[in-house]
Image (cartoon, rainbow, N blue to C red; front, side, top):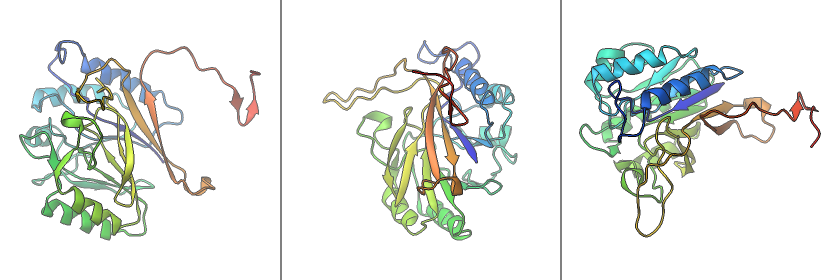
Length: 280
């Protein structure tokens, strides 16, 4: 299984530059082109939230016009910049967002790895939470298939990053309870999140937690005493999660890569099918 994770696309009104500098629609179109060029192609693209800069039906329709070009199927989750009602109007009840309740939760069961998508949004607030109701729902879903390798996805990283502002920590409530819940379910092979606008990896809940990069403007890594949150001109990126299963003799079943997006010279092959094709 090849799972592509995109996040924090922050689509805005047409001809609008976010912060006066970033064409997020163009950036998403470039990400779609890069994903479509993957060989082999991904089995699924998962968006881990903040689809729009400010959730609205016109912005989601603009987003839809771009991602309709994706060759692989797409699934969506809400982030703190998103609006549940507007998301439901454009995507609710479809394969991209098969959720219609108060929380936009759903489970993807048709892949080699099961994916449980959790709604961690607090309406009108930047950080998220996993409240008792959401934790109970997640516990029930995990208990329904204890023998299947599973990814748990949510927008807000449930861990501290060492940074500041919105990237310091994603959840203001329920992080400890989520950690304890996941430890009771050893089939969880990865926790996936967005929100941080840069890739981060740590141990959490007895497994590995990964916050994916953004397709638009990354946040710079600053852990200094002034605790500055910088928007940088680093290349945007997407993540690729490869399920290796029996092909991995060392037992590393799920391997995560980060792929920058941009215009580069053509690749230079060193090996092909394990055979050297270029001397260095």
